[in-house]
Image (cartoon, rainbow, N blue to C red; front, side):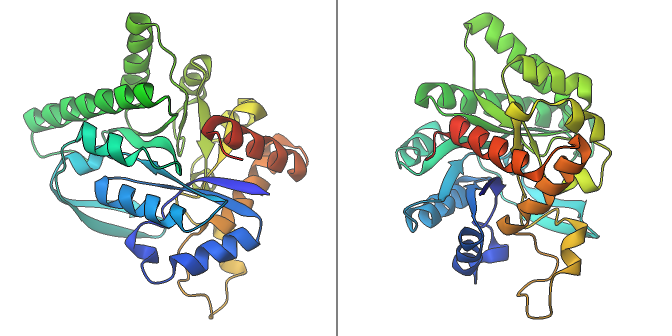
Amino acid sequence: MLIDTHAHLNFNAYKEDSDEVIRRSLGGGVWMINVGSQYKTSVRAVEIAQKYEKGVYAAIGLHPIHLAEGIFKTKIDMEEIAFKTNEESFDYERYKELSKNPKVVAIGEIGLDYWYKPKTTKKIEEFKEKQKAALLEQLKLAEELNLPVIFHCRAAHEDLITILNTRYKIQNTRLRGVVHCYTGTWEQAEKYLEMGFYIGFNGIIFKLDLDEVIRKTPMERILLETDCPYLIPPSVAEVLTKATPSVGRNEPLYVKYVAERIAQIKKIEISQIHEATTLNAKYLFGIE
């Protein structure tokens, strides 16, 4: 079996057929954690997880992008997409109440995202400070609840590493968690590993040269993801048929292609990837 530790079947891309996608994934031996990006999608992740006795879990959190209102554009897969965000402030007590559901296994995705830049230098700095403040609040919640953290970090690894190191030195605490969709350098990955964090790999490994990071990251610290509906592995297009509901849309079942690529890079048997990453996910998120 495999565990997709970062899926978004709680997003609108699966509004009409999330149950069908989940059944297909579970039938193929793939469990999943659906990850929230704001309160609405966090609630949806919990609602989906409650439908299944086993194999479907939820993470709740406020993504840094949703701290601002506006239209953001980014290139994902083969085309540029635009999406509108409605500004949300992190409500500690509301998220804490939602976390009481036993299917909630992590706080996330939370973190820093410097890729999307406001128009002026002043606004850029204000947005960065706003992100840092929301991150610290959510780290506090994770510590109170003793839950692992799922970090989103884009173009901001040095700041995230500094925040985590500073927090540990001042409070002498050790968070558990994973740096999702890893895109940093090996030197940055080493720092995360030294702090005890896991590294999450998904379809981005087919787009960026992360071979060195993958080779050097110990198997006991690797987690597999899809980040679906995004980052579909290129080889999936070869097996999709016209009957597939949404060609080009990723789903948990395709995490096996990420596993295969990591096995190739590390030059080990695919069975080792399955066994190690499944044990890692179960241990970090406390799932059975």
